[in-house]
Image (cartoon, rainbow, N blue to C red; front, side):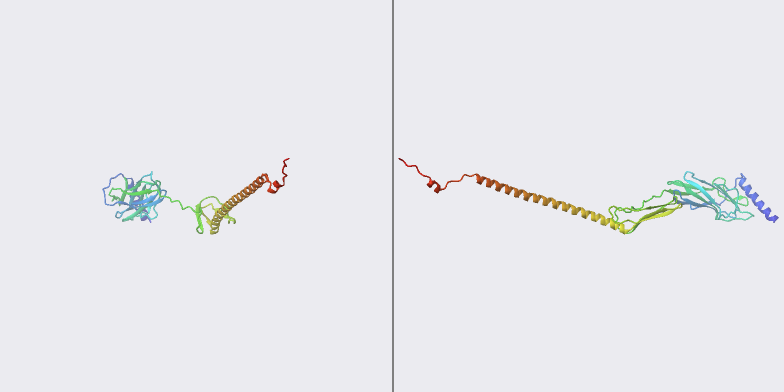
Amino acid sequence: MKTKLISILASTVAVASLLLSGTSYAAGSAAFSLSPASGTEDINSTFAVGIYENGTSVNVVTANLSYDTSKLQLVSVDISASAFASDAGSTSTSISRYVPAGGTVSGPAEVAVVNFKAIAGSGTANVTVGTSGSHIASGGADQWNGAPTSGTYTLNTPVVTPPPATGGGSTTGTGSTTKTTTTTTSSKTTTPVVAGASTTQPAVTDTTAAITSSKTVKTTPVVIANAANVNGTSKGTTLWLLSLVLALVIASGTLYELRSRRAARIKKAAEAKKTLNKRPVKKTTAARVAKPKKVLA
């Protein structure tokens, strides 16, 4: 038990000495890497970037990070699958881990996974691991080659396509519109009205919940058929009424013309009769003979 405790203390002292020492180590061949090293991320989306080292018999690692804070937000650091079980004073941008009790790790090995959120919708954002102060050490000797490694991520704003409009004189079968809302619990019952329809339309209940819920409003074929019949009946009635009015106008004009002609004939006949009555009556030959003649004395 005492031997194990001494081993742990010795390992801790070695880690502390390495992290706090200002000694410059000779450049080695070990390097850091990022996975994935590139990608396209939508604005407000969260994506993970894994940090790896490829040293040999490594027992201490410090991976310092830098990134564009105007385009990326560091959400969390996940060390649940790290090959280095113990923490050596990590911060959000400096991940320091070690293997306790004299253990070592040979790469490639995962150091940590960093979760970022895209807060810009265009351009590119760089994430760099292995900035100044980083280490990949084995037994107090730094194997890191001193070269930082960067990943480049393209930021995107997705185009939102509005759903196709429904209704508006459609004559197809059953249609529905579904939308998701988050609101307080409420219930509202409405009755859709179709202009000119003679049938009573079914009530539609709109219910939303305190957590995200769906609302589906369905339009039955009966309503659409009624609307179509109403439109057809309305047009047919209008044409029939126009035809009837036109026929009445023509009939009235014809009757007026006949009455005018009849009145003219009656007037003409009356005038002819009146003219005939005013003519003088000529005396007949017999009347002239009957008149006595004067006798000369």
